[in-house]
Length: 95
Image (cartoon, rainbow, N blue to C red; front, side, top):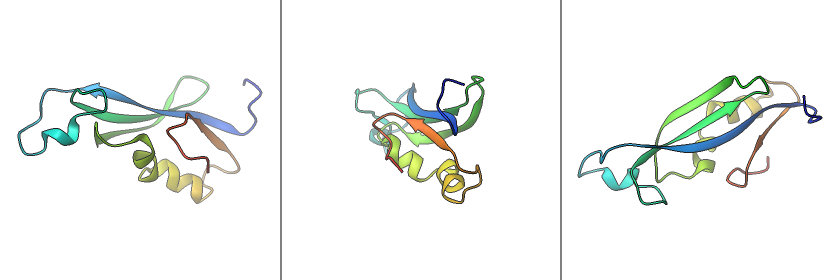
């Protein structure tokens, strides 16, 4: 669409604020900005359609960890999308 051949989407994470979860696991949900959150990964295509969403990781987890454990990475590695790319920011490995 914007002269990025073979790009099927863009990827990023965002923090969704939550209330303090519970005493035992609460600190896992404190993100680098100091509040409690889920770190949610989303892949979006050029039609602004969400093609993948992962909303299960605590706020302290880095974007690259979520990606490393996602079905999107597995599908890319297994060439299920064909010869293509997903664009991400510096929080993601170049692979």
